[in-house]
Structure formats: C-alpha cells, structure tokens
View 1 (cartoon, helix red, strand yellow):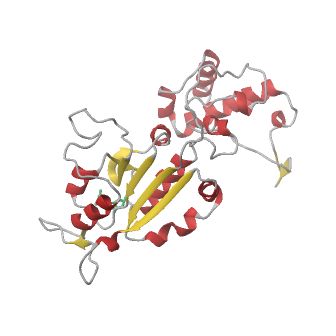
View 2 (cartoon, protein in one colour; view 1 turned 45 degrees about the vertical axis):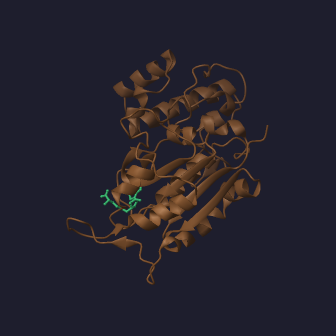
Amino acid sequence: MMRTAMRFDLITIFPGFFAGFLDHGILRRAQADGLIEIATHDLRNFTHDRHRTVDDRPFGGGEGMVLKPEPLARALDSLGIPPNPARGGKSSSGACSLFPDPCTILTSPQGRPFTQSIARELSHLNRIVLICGRYEGIDERINQLYCDMELSIGDYVLSGGELAAAVILDATMRLIPGVLGNEASSEFESFGAPDDSITTEQEGVPRSQHGSGGLLDYPHYTRPAEFAGLRAPDVLLNGDHLQIRRWRREQQLRKTLANRPDLLDSAILNDEDRRILDKLRSNPGS
Ligand code: SAH
C-alpha cells in the first residue's frame, strides 16, 4: 500500500532560506514523486502590529533578543497543533510516546543530540513540525506548551534554527521507503542499523551483503584506477567479493577506531571484527 506523503512544516522568520535547499537532488525528486510535502511558514505573518514584530528583550536582562511567544503560538495553532501543558517526551509524566505523530520539534543547542536512529524513528511519522529559533532562542513557554522534543544537531551554536531544521528534514526524508533509488542502501552507510545476520562471509555483491552495524562507512573509489599518482586499492579491482567485503569491513573498523571510538561500544561486532580491532589497537600504524 502506498503511504501518504510525509508532511514537514517549517516555522521560520526566513522562509526564503529554504528555497535552494528544497529544489535539488533527492529532496526535489521526493516532493515531485509525492513522497514528501514541505510547507514553510513565515512567522511574521502571525504578527498583528505594524512592524510585524517577532522578538522582544529578555526578562531579567542580558544580551540579545528572544522570539516572542504569541506569533509562534498563532503559527502552531494555524497548523492544528494545540497547546498542551503535559506535552513531550521531555515531560516526566511518561504518558506520551517519545515520537508522537504529529511531532513538534524545537531546534536548539540544548536539545538531545540528533542521530541517525532518531532520523529513523521520525521517518515513520506522517507529520513533523520544525520550529527554527533565532537570536537567543524562543520564549520557553512555547517549548513547554507545544514542543514534543528539542533536537540539537551538534555541540556548537548556529545563528538560527534553519540549518538545523534542514539537516533534520534531509536526514529523515531520505529514510522514507521509496525516496532513495535503492531502498536498502541507507542500511549500509555510516551508522547503518545493526544487523547481526550480515557477515563478511556471505555470498553476493559486497555492498548489499555488508551492513555497517553502527560503524562508519568504508572509503569509496571510482575510475580512473590511478589518479595523481595514487592507485585505487588493488583488492577492489580484482572482483573477489569475499576479499572486498573483508577489506571494507577492516576499513570501517579502522576509520571508526580512529575517528569515533565511542561508536564501537554499541556496534555489532563478531569475533573476526574483534580480532581486527585488537590488531589495530596494538599496531596503530599498520
Ligand atoms: N542562546 C542559545 C543559542 C541560540 S542560537 C543557547 O546558548 O543555547 C539561535 C537559534 O539557532 C536557536 O534557537 C536554535 O533554533 C538554533 N540553533 C543554534 N545552534 C543549534 C544547534 N546546535 N542545533 C539545533 N539548533 C541550533
């Protein structure tokens, strides 16, 4: 059965920001194919004063400005998102699902870290509403009343939530079935879902038999075989699928150990993987 298009609503003071981003590549095609639907909402359209004021000075003093609650509340009400003081995965009641549908998300450096597994959960929903903060952020009462979760895209501070919302939208929509040409392919890249039924010993084309199990991806090469004096690894050119799978797995382990050793704690590893890791740890230069 064809599922209905997943809908993304973006609330922002810069709706024009998203134009180029939405018009390219997979994102453009997914909209054209009716798999996703994206609407941007200009926060200033929900102001009632002559200057279309969206911000005000912070109570208690201090630097900067804060996005006022009323225009945000009106924008959310207009989208059919009701205020609810008991909202949120973040509330202590535990009564709400962690990923309610629709799900209202506040972009914020104070949020839970956005990860591939959160993107996977979000991709099952019918509708996501993303709020883009600006200045020092938004009035906290909007978070309390309307937001199901706060998500951060990393430990740094951006000047606005638009880039964060774009990141969350992009990572989520490409996991919707049918959006990527090869439906399976997202399982095999960095952070792919752990699947312990997949081993390097299985027959078949290397990539499709080789789940990343929570590791980083392996390096990719294409023609020409020699470029700037560097040859692509011979193992990739000789067509021996088992050797290729083993080489790729080792590269994944190498890269994860070097750049993201924290991922190894939750990755799905077999005895062979552990042996390779021991070897790499005892001989890092190898
Ligand atoms: N005063 C805030 C930063 C506000 S930055 C603080 O110190 O935590 C302005 C807006 O940019 C935020 O409201 C949020 O919407 C967005 N933003 C900035 N950094 C972000 C990040 N790492 N992840 C998600 N959103 C971010």
